[in-house]
Amino acid sequence: MSGAHPAPAHPVIDAVRDGDLERASLRLLYGFLVALEETAPAAREELLHLMVERRLPAHRDPHPDGGHR
Image 1 (cartoon, helix red, strand yellow):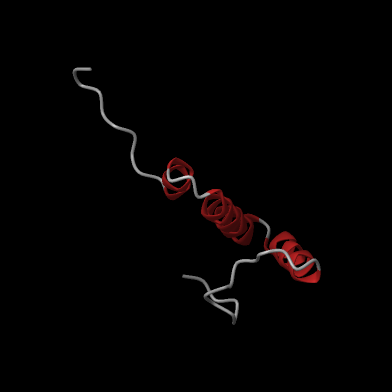
Image 2 (spheres, one colour):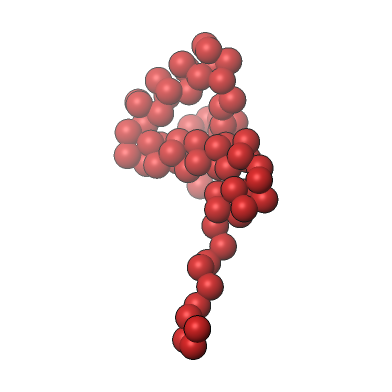
């Protein structure tokens, strides 16, 4: 295909292509948590609390003091 550009790399797509659905799921979850942190921090905190309570895999906040990048 003349002029066609390959799709840019994306960590979730790469993980699915590699057959690593756990890594893909964790990357999706991380992206969702980052979006919540920026748009609805209280909802993010509630979700993290529920995840810990139910022992689901949770993102470890690189800024435990609540700071931003």
